[in-house]
Image (cartoon, rainbow, N blue to C red):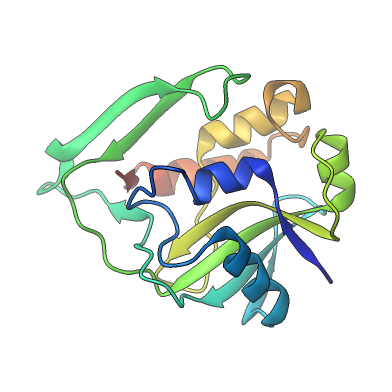
Length: 184
């Protein structure tokens, strides 16, 4: 099995400004090399047959991407309308500022099959393309953000994957993200 880094994920996981919320201490090439050389601790089926998540012990200083919302930190939540790319419509997002999360225990790359990548107009020269990565404390998946589930249901032309909305998964996502937020 071979894995490649998509341009979409490269910009998000290894931004030019090297922000603290990105993967730390390694280059994109080193990241892909390690994923191709190392057997994941666990493979989690994704939200559709073309998606897999590979659980790897974090070998970097990358911080956990999600923080629980508490009465003590709620005042640090911010929100804005943002788009992930110039072609996507902005959606409402929220995040913490001024908090320091712990170093993640796990890096969990999100992979799409070569066939799905071609369908979405971003072919890869590998069996799987990295479309994102979760930075977690537990060797598990973090629920997809509700707006990402909605975008996926809208289809490829809106930046999604064309997978219909799973109402139960959406409810679980809302429950989780009502109690957690990303940080910047």
